[in-house]
Image 1: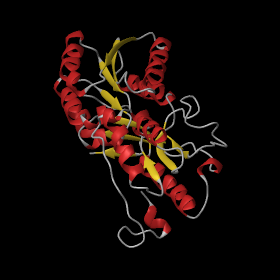
Image 2: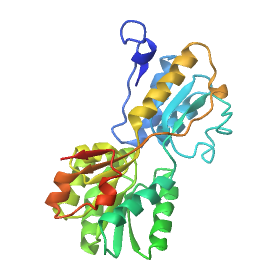
Image 3: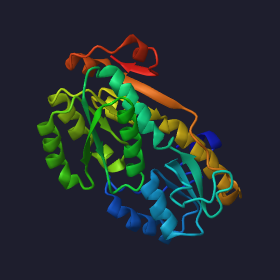
Image 4: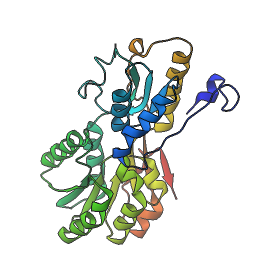
Length: 276
């Protein structure tokens, strides 16, 4: 998380209790309750559902989030400048990233008429992100195939249905449940020969074609700075919620070759990293 940069060493001067929902949002409430029962000094969260669960579990323990969408709109903070309450942190760039991802995808998948969007309707932020993708499609006069998956058990059928309608490309919106099943989704895109874009680089590391989104290592380093401030006496209410400053475009040329896809030079020049 970057805590070492501030002199913290686990087992020496800090103890870290880790909890992971494995992409199952229904587990977040119990995990947050566990951490509150341990009387930890700070709770660090990743993603809006986790932040909401932590906020519901405690009004006193400071919460620092490393990835949050629309914290004002979701009621988690009063304002970005003065969040109030016990939660602060760094946003993940907002739902508008989905529109930018859509536009990047159309630069690769030229000539397609229909683009599938895989998203999680149970995630409170996803409808806003999906709408951004819809607006981008309308601007380019393209059709959207909505593929909503709110439970991992629905994924197989959703992918089969998507394949039946034969879209020309695929946009996967950022969601922890979908992220947990990224190898299955990336494998489906490869088998179906679908150019696809994702919003986290882990997808590309696992064989996905391209990702565009916030640099989460950078977000976690900035969140670590807030953890340090809080442990030294600062209050979350007085620490402004920050917007990300670093975004990254990652392209997997090996996957592009397997798809028979030539990445335009204009896109390659914008890439922060190219996987050969």
